Every structure is written in C-alpha cells, then in structure tokens.
Image 1 (tube, rainbow, N blue to C red):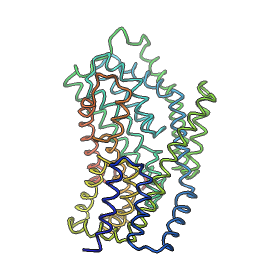
Image 2 (cartoon, rainbow, N blue to C red):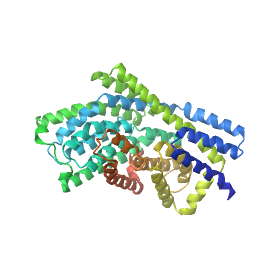
Image 3 (cartoon, rainbow, N blue to C red):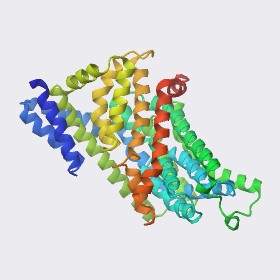
Image 4 (cartoon, rainbow, N blue to C red):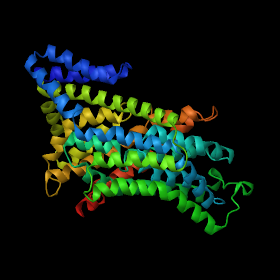
Length: 447
C-alpha cells in the first residue's frame, strides 16, 4: 500500500495544480521537483532527466515540424483562401436548406488538411459564416455545432500538430500516422455532412435556404469553375506536403518547411503577404510553439519522476485489475481519456497519459502483425478521442473560441446544446475505428 502513496499524491497534486489555474508547465515541473525530494530520488537521476529533456525535446529534429506547420496554418488563414472557398461553396448550395452549414463543413474538411490550428479555424469560420447563418434564421445550436465541429477537424486530418507530437511520444513513424489518420478524418467529416443533410431534410426550418435576393447570379458552370479555381491553391499545397511524405521524398519536418514556404508563396501570389502579416504570423507561431514545448519539458520531468516512484506499475496494476481482456482494457483507457478531455487540453493528456498507457496496449494481442501496427492504430484512436476534448464542456476550447466572436444573443447554453450531436458523432466515429481497424490501417498498409 505504501508503494502507491507517492504516485497517487503526485497525480492529486497535478490535478489540483491544473484546476488552480496555475500554468501547466510550472505545475508539471514543480510536481516533479517536489516529489523527487519527497521520494528521496538521487540528484544523479535528475541529471538524466535534464539530459532527456535536451535530447528528446529541445534537439529533436521532428519537433521542428511543429512551428513550421503552425506558421503554415496561420499564413493560410491570413491569406483569406478559406474565405474565398467558403463563398464559392455557399453559392453552390444556395437555395437549399442547410446549404451554408454544408459549405462550412466542407471548407472545414479542406482547410483542416492545410491549417491544423483549431483556434484560428473556428474564429475564421465563425467570423465568415456565423453572421450570415443568424441573419438567415439558422438554429443557434445547429450553427454553433457546425462551426465548432468543422473547426476541430484540423487536429485529426493530417498534417496535424497532434499527430506529430503523438508520433514522437510513442516513437512511431509520423508518416504512417499521417496516412492512418486520413480515412478516419474524412469519415468524421462525412458523418457531419450526413447529419446536417438528415436534420435539414426533416426540419428545414432549422437551416433555411439563403434568400433569393442574396443568391448568386452566376450560372451553374461558372459557379463550378469559380469553386475549382479557389480549390487549386489549398489542394496544391496539401498535395505538396502530404505527397512528399507519402512518396518518401521528404520527412515530416522537411514537408512542413515546404508547406511554410508554399503558404508564403500563395499569400504573395494573391497579394496578401505584407510585413505586418509576416510579423503577426511569426509572433503567434512563437507563442504557440513555446506553449507546446513548455508543456513537453514539464511533462518529460513529471513522467520520469512518476515512473521512478513506481507510478507506471501502479497504473498497469489498476488497469488489469479492472479489465480482463485486450478490448476491455482498450475501452477503459478510451473512457478515461474521454473523461480527462472534459478538463484537460490534448497536449497535457498526450504527454502525461500516453507514455503510461502505450506500453500496456503494446503488450496486448489485438491480432496485428507487430506492436508498431498496434501503436499506430492506438495513436489514431487517441487522436479521434482527443478531438472531442475541444468540444466537451465545461472546458472545451472550441466552445470558448466561438463564444468570443459570437453575438450576445448566442449564449454558452446554446453552444453546449449544439455540440452534443457532434460529440455523439465523434464517439460513433471512434467506435468505427475500433471495430473496423482497416479504416485506420488500410492506407499505411499500401506503403
């Protein structure tokens, strides 16, 4: 019993520190230092922790992909490519119930493969589409749920910052992880589209068609040509980034550099590149990267001390005492990650939870060829699960991003109500990935 007192106390200190509002980096690092003293861990071990931080995080070549992908997404967001694409798709669906909601979802799918910055995506879609939706008497919950769900697809559909970090944490190929996440991401986007089509067919009053006076005067062929012209730039960039990884021409870090340069070239080509834009993108990239690396440093120290105190053995014993088989263990871990998503960000969950649970999953038999395949499948399941952490109350960041730009009449209650169907859809998508593993592993298997 005494063997689990310090690990349990360490977990309790972490939870208390996070809920106190103290910066997560300092909570993780401070807990590591405090419990290394309480546990009598020798200073020589702490030297190895600092070496692990330096070699595993600060000098990790793969981690260079993080600021490059962040910069690429921010530059595309500033260049208004998504705005032009949304207007084109909106014209295509003009005159049908739910047309604007469908346009938002489709733009979310396309831009997810080009940006991956959740806050920027939701604010961008909200600023462009929410006023038009409300003006056309859209149901507030449906409008809120559509924008939040479409905006969060960027955390799953590659190139995704989450997948880069998860691949690094689990020591698996990020290229394989990118390919494995493509189908689940598209399936989730497709389920969103089906939901909107069904709801607007049954209750067309929830999403009235855009008024005839606001519809475009362009003919059908002209609308398609305009749409294709606005699709060329983002699709070309996506093909360059993902295509270079899949073809083995470039590593994820090199592909991220290609994407960053490509985004600048596109912004320059359409006249949106300026010194002010470049400065703002660099500043936001620096802040985002510093936050991610700070959490990574703190989590590395926390995990090392936690394992030294026997926390990994404690977790394994607790899991196996409750779950008796591979799938029961998987369901228990997925349920725990889902609940943690109500309160924690995906970065903290990834760095603290994954190193503890990955060895457990890798040791179980799910019928795959090797543990690497098992971990790739598990990583995508975690990514789908963690996407819900942006939507689930009380601390879903997507909800607060939207609330920050929504008019006063759209209450947080309406936003909570609107995301519930989409959280249910994400759980359905997670179930499909669990029971149909080919959905995840088919594309990497072609390589």
